[in-house]
Length: 402
Image 1 (tube, one colour):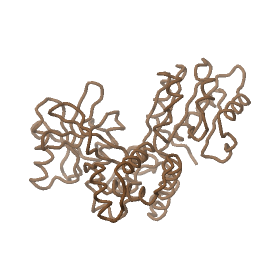
Image 2: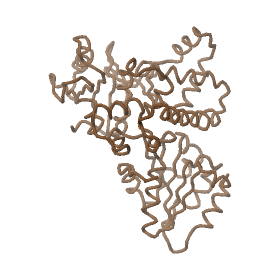
Image 3: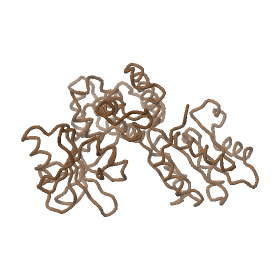
């Protein structure tokens, strides 16, 4: 299959090569970390470097089970006098991999790039050993712009509809997007792999039916404040008795696998983080839609909010939910010293919707930029009392620079 470049991520990796820093690509399984890795393999092979590539998703490398096997393989394939690139896909599948990597990470003629599908890939010994000598690059599923390139699509309403329905997993490219059942089966396979390998097996989950019910509940409540208490009440009403501790444990396991992301609330009045009623969003809306099922027309508002959240993260923002007295702001996004406020909506066609989206932002008494993002027809990038409206498709392609 032809390799499609993801230059945004490749350029991030390139900046740290030759700096004696371990580069870790993290993110949900199947979001395209391997695309970045394989592009690096191709380019460095053209430079006549020594490239050692280990893909733990392939049975070819099943024999590399622990750090001793890893070191033996690297030593066997190193070429004296050549700069060496050690690239390992799904490094967490190698037992005590950190013990093997510590032999090489500070060598001037070696670069190490690894991928991991769990947020605790760098926990424990490796993080302690490196103490700042590593960089983490978070990889997401395709942006809308990348989606158009991967599937060779024109930017139009039909392409946006497909992105909203199917999400941005790069592996959909060879499947095509014309047969919805083929797409559904692919998404099912990805979801099952994440569930089994990155949640159930890794976290030793015993109550798998409840875990699946919990993920479906989260998917059906995108953008709503969730707590262990209200989840427990819902499960109890459906004759599913579970403890709050189990709910919190399983939620944490799904976020560590990057399947869902939790977003904490930020008190705009008191300028502090609040410790309850987080919101949850999926790392890919295609997987969210598969989990929940049903027609997108019934929950398009949730999907728009999820897409806006994903793209804010893609743009490098740290994202919280804003809370000011009884008023809620969908997103308070910060990058360095910059802060923006963002409301996400499907359509702004009634006075009540306009007041909710624009009125809530007007209540914030500071001069940070304020945006409303929606799919409202004929409503282009315009200002309303200093608040900027941005069409969803424009935001997903160009951010706030459309």
